[in-house]
Image 1 (spheres, rainbow, N blue to C red):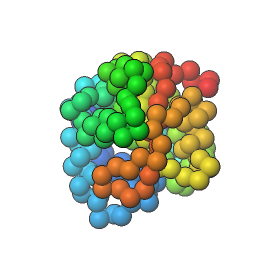
Image 2: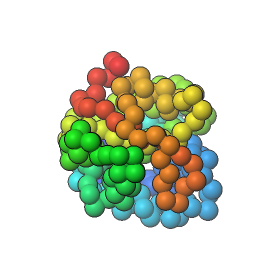
Image 3: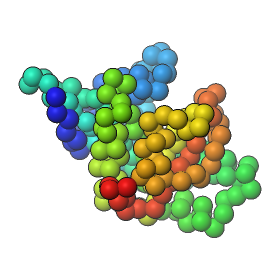
Length: 192
């Protein structure tokens, strides 16, 4: 089996959204009842400036299967995520001067997910590296669920790629789990 990373156009992303959301639901352990709502949200994401999407495609015996997805776009004060981050920073005594600079010039890594059966094989690293290659911003920001001692593949990947804490134990509206918001300056050095 070989895995390749491919960039998607906006229309390709829209067509593949049901399959991509299925990977997201499986990787995050979310209730499948939110599937249609997430498909609709993801399809609308292509209109944001800087929208970029990449997929990991596994080829086995001539059959292709998408096993990973990553996408993002330029951060904007119009985005719910940006507003949530700003509220969280305010609750923790910020934002600092560095936070303000960062929030004026960042690429939001909206989603990075790998099929659970293929996690730990370097696919997430390849997806994130390709997604952030030539990203049109000075910073990259993302969020990930908190786990004890950061002991999962996602945290390991983000730390290896130089992502540092921006905000910890953050609660998004509508999700009871705490999240870490991480960031790093770009460009990304794929060698780590």
